Image 1 (cartoon, rainbow, N blue to C red):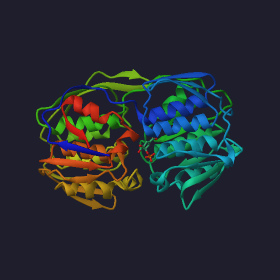
Image 2: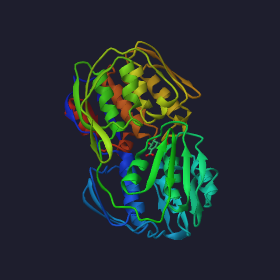
Image 3: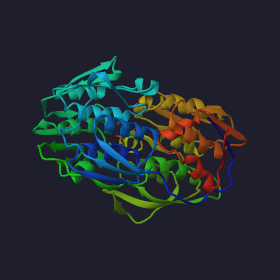
Image 4: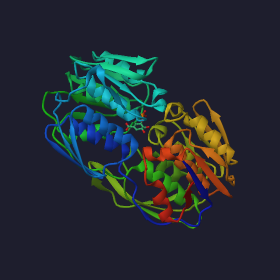
Length: 434
Ligand code: S3P
């Protein structure tokens, strides 16, 4: 599928970003191992979460889908799932979160489970979950470090483990396996990776707490309480609308009730430091997370620096941040972001390649990129590299480029934000499906 995007008239109005992807995965997985019936409202019906839905059903959980966004999950209890054994493969499609979190749960089961996915997922590193799960006593085989993987668990022991990278998926896999281990598991993280698993497990009655950047989970065989959750709007999806509102002249967009969990909002901090005027409304709580309205208008922005913990707090926002950086005055530098090379695409190489086609002055670095701005972008034929966030970032670039931008492979947007095009069109964006 191709999208044709043209220089946009002002984007104006209100928008609601779809349900948080990370929380939607977790609501299904944690609901499936809870004791009792969980209700999930505002779930994200995107391809990645559908992979988790299919997987928990294949593991024996009954999930009723009353509307695309309203689910009822009948929990099987901590040890009540029925892994299909080696006869059936659990297909995680393109979703790293599905594979890594499921590996943590399946490490608690004595039978062997095989997890696989499509070509994009088969390129992604899995030893990072295999190593700690083996230390806990599970047998985990990877295929040269990548999917497919086979997991056989059983009697697990608690571990004290330092994550080599600040990954919420790996942290979550360990914490989920820790539910099946005896004793206290401690996970030290090099930076503040998103903490949705911890918040949800705490709401389910698990003894889990955080000291500095270390998470402690003390297991007991006590059943997990079911969840009642209204999933907040995904900051990482809102980010595309936010940057569009910042860059398209004359815009004014109000984003309703966005998740502003501080482990996710690094982009807000860096854009504000660069001179953006984003108003954050009163913070309230939804689904155990802080939410607030965000109001964005265009502003002249200066170059920014992104390193260290800030990278962790905006790990999914670099494609669209690179677009913003092309409009900033001066040299924007991103460092310490080598993780971007193992996302849905090699986001350092792919973002630089595609934005250069539009005239951007962006140079790859081993662990980030450098952008000189401001540059008037030119419409071009660009490619998503099979990466939903790159596709949406290129749409935002197209909205401020001279002439027409054609984004090839844009169907991947459905992995996280199926209604992205209608939402943007409603705000006034000139986007057509070709
Ligand atoms: C996610 C964690 C992050 C993020 C991904 C979703 C999660 O990945 O990039 O989109 O839901 O836990 P890593 O754990 O690999 O950093």
